Length: 408
Image (cartoon, rainbow, N blue to C red; front, side, top):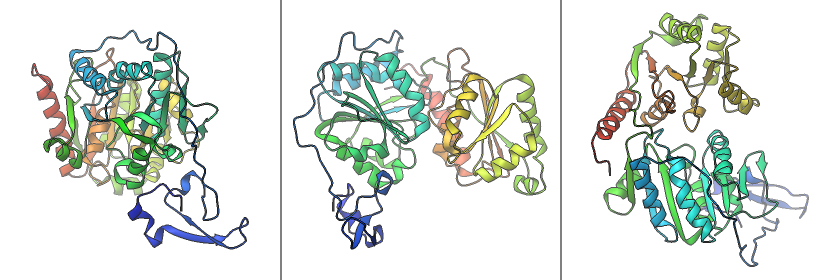
């Protein structure tokens, strides 16, 4: 059966199901592993391109980005540049706000000039929407292909593809350079099928670059064993430190919400931000709790968004434009979204959905722009957790390391 999953996974009987097929008029089997890309049943032909590889020619100048890299960014950019054309792997371990996207530009330019095909894969649509216009602006002479849920165009092959990891089911041995952004993020880090799909989309001799602010222990083990090259960037591109979170006890917030009101300390924090006109992210563990909080606030300056929200993209854009000043959200916006002059609150931080990595990523939403490199992060909780203290310790370690002269 032509399902692009690992051999071990395809032997799992629980992954298969049968249904009365209109095509073969029999009970037909399909695999659930990749059904999100469309049902491929036992009798369905699975087509593969076996003609010549597309040849790409791009017009000069390829890269039209006039920014300037910091010393650490330049070191990482040179490392990636040297990797292009090889079959090596590189982990770019960079703090949130280090300017990872800009670091990629020169290496991608080299690959395009050499006629290589590049893919930047990301796990989340929100991150994709943030990245795509920046690549179109940096590479205006290149037709950048965009592939994500609800927006997938295959009108012509492109040398530069931006894709969610799910969309890479469509490719096999197509890319000379594979860049995986936020390699530690859910669902990619937990889904063997998605990881296999990324590998399947690579040519055998492809260069692979992994980007992460919070790499997994498995990846760090490979680094320690000298099985994976790494460059570590502990300083943000503007040189200012990461915001260190404050812990604020808010009492039994679950009990408060059941009675229809917010803890006083959180309500005062929110009202203070709204009165000052500051942009605010407020993260919650579940959308049902988020709705209860939204009802408590009753303000035109506030809106909410979650993974299943049909107006998700529009609401985030309204927030970017300043049409709303506070966005209540689940953890879907912990990565890849840049809003200037923003403070962040995490409500109910003591819940186990807020892992150390997730909390570090949420802190990374603050102080990302050079015009406003400051901002506050507050963890509202009913009791400190290991994840909270670990996240704070990680951020402090990055800040201590970034104050040193060397960061290699």
